[in-house]
Length: 120
Image (cartoon, rainbow, N blue to C red; front, top):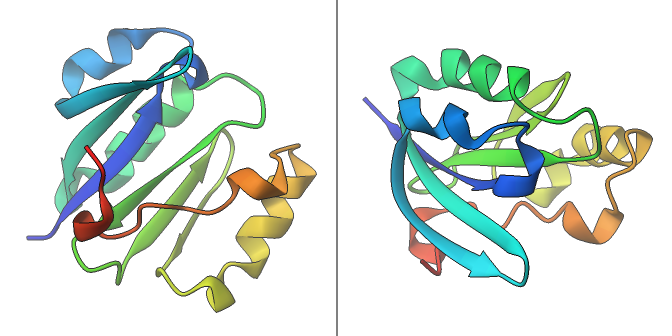
């Protein structure tokens, strides 16, 4: 069974209570943001996505899940999610959707997308 990590920004969530039912591996701050790294088993991925989506603000926020080697990347917006890999050539539809919902292009980088690239 594969494991996935995701980085969840505190300001993307209506309430941080949603994190109570998730496995938080670590957290860090970046300016006024608190970023939580969570762990999800592949069997729980879709239900976790739906739970997080239900608790996200209706805005341009997104988060992404990735497995250890980047062979699976799941980009999650409030009302839609995309399953792909860490090859940017496969991200066109995601980038277009992100622009449609107002996410700045420079934020649609999906980094990290492999466990070895994590900084915390």
